Image 1 (cartoon, rainbow, N blue to C red):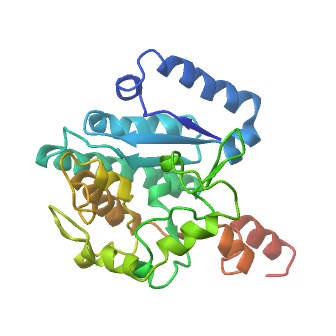
Image 2 (image 1 turned 90 degrees about the vertical axis):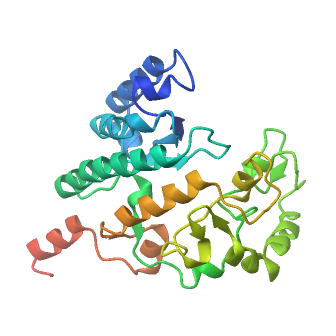
Length: 268
């Protein structure tokens, strides 16, 4: 379950006036009444904009204080009119403060709640050759209340009509020309293909369509590009984190608690 909360009152009220207190009280109550579910099943989704950017570090500090173990931060998908050099400088400053907060939290607890700072233990090879769009991938399919299936929640008008029909979209996005389009994408900061973070970056093509007056599918919004570059630098400073696939394949080290238990039993 994900709750949309853009952070502290000053940040969240910009998008949804009058709702911060309700959501904050809800987090407190859920943590008190359902601690295990709160810790394992709940996440907070934050949309970062040039307007709420000055409150980012305070917002992360609030959520860490609330014991939130899964925070999903993403830049605005639609056009951010306030983005520019000043916003980029503020993002650099805020992300540095966020890194300090998360590093202290990691050193104390061993956890990395901010998901964009989690580096996979076994990243897939040649990710730079993957399609520019993940429509109809298992994690992007959306099922409506009427049973209709869509390849992506952002494209609800383009109904697939059923789970089997999804193979049509899969075939479409895996055509040979799609990786080529990825090589040609760019922002004001340069070509995506020349970026050190090309293997870690995925900017939704819908964001390109939201740039006012843009007709070039290769154009990437500057705000999304800056977010991925700056976040990517800090993510590499954290140790890799094993994901569900790593656990299933046995590619991850034993959790610390299990290692300690094995040593106590004389098995390690």
